[in-house]
Amino acid sequence: MELSTIRGSLAPEAAHRWDDFVAGHPRATLYHTSRWVSFAADVFGFEPAWLTAESTGPLLTGVLPLIRQTSRLFGDRWVSLPYFNYGGPLGADAPTERRLMDAAVSLARRTETKMLEIRDVEARLDYALRTDKATLVLDLPEAIDELSERLGAKLRSQIRRANREQPEVAEGGVELVGEFYGVFAETMRDLGTPAYPRRFFELMFDRVGVDCRIVIVRLGGQTAAAALLTHHRATVEIPWAGSLRRFRTAAVNMRLYWECLRHTVESRYSRFDFGRSTVGSGTYRFKQQWGAHPVPLYWYYPLEPAGLMTPAHQGRLTTAARAVWCRLPVPFATRLAASFSGGLPW
Image (tube, rainbow, N blue to C red; front, side, top):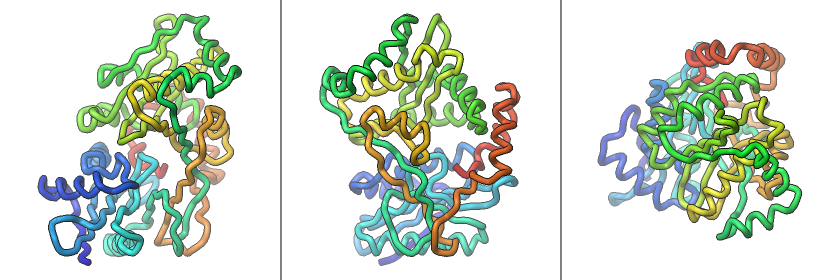
């Protein structure tokens, strides 16, 4: 087996070989594809690295995408992959994946980076890791009426609560980025978390928009809730969503998720991925109530001593920073965040 590393852009032929392997791997995610890796690197001007394994013949036997996040606030780190829940090695077998991870360690040491983070869904041995995050996934029926019946009377009543305000639902693409971003930026401010800049989502639709849709819920002509969905194989994922606090009494968040589930069923997808949450948190329980089951996320740190990795964002300083951030005016917080949010370690 031969391992190789390409740093920077992939040539078209190399990208084609990469994507052929990803398309045939059962654990591949949308974010393993070359177009998504390139988007994630280019949006903030970071360097990608493409680790591959191959034997004789034209086909690869393994891939591992990495992006080098550099930040004056958060340091220098290789990540597979930032901004998304998934990444990690894909190989023809476990030994190949282990060798790809070892190659990532060698790359990090050669480039003198402080951290290597690999976001995975496989339980592996011998690496420091975090296990405080999980994604929640719901298997869907073929008909929306069957899903409604499955959810139960209480949940259906909460979904219908927004009907009193005569909501308007819109679904589309890049033309809805402005509305989506208004909700996203304010929601992130309320959470005390710096928001990605609007260009993050504009470039997303420019580069990989074929995989994306936006769902909007309006009340009285005002945007009240919004979600961005991605589509891959049998799954629709909701990586980013939010609702404005002033509309929460109208249960717009429940209506938003119902409309996203409706879109998924009517578009003939069979799984809905509610996205990442801290295990046991309020958002985790919100997703569970829809019937979703948790899928553990394993975030590995091979440069660290073996053992449990303490989440960096739980320190006192970060907690205090969040408390200050959520009091900032939204326009100011959004402009300020644009200068450093690409380097955030989450």
